[in-house]
Amino acid sequence: MATKPIPIPPTHRQAQALDFVSNYQRKHRGVSPTFVEIGEALNITSQAAHGLMVYAAKRGLVTMTRGHRTIRLTEKRELA
Image (cartoon, rainbow, N blue to C red; front, side, top):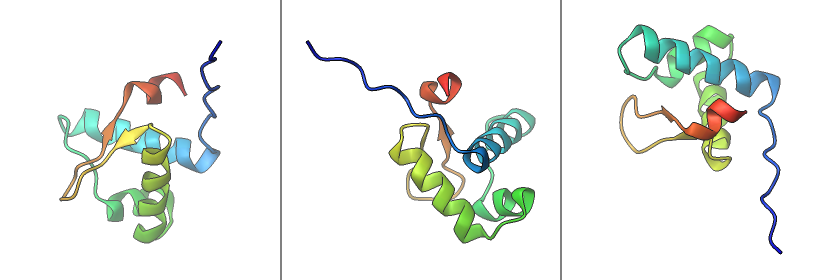
């Protein structure tokens, strides 16, 4: 019998980034922040912000496509 994998909650820093994205999208009518804006909000570099989002995408917490402002939170994000 197959069991569902137990979701691993995001790290503290990942949770901060995801909360910022969620609040930003709510405030800006669904528009996603840039990595620079995420970095400035968390006092990290844009490269570090990109890394946080890539890791969140690998865990299924967000989706990202090529292009500008394409971060989208997934339903899994609400469960984390």
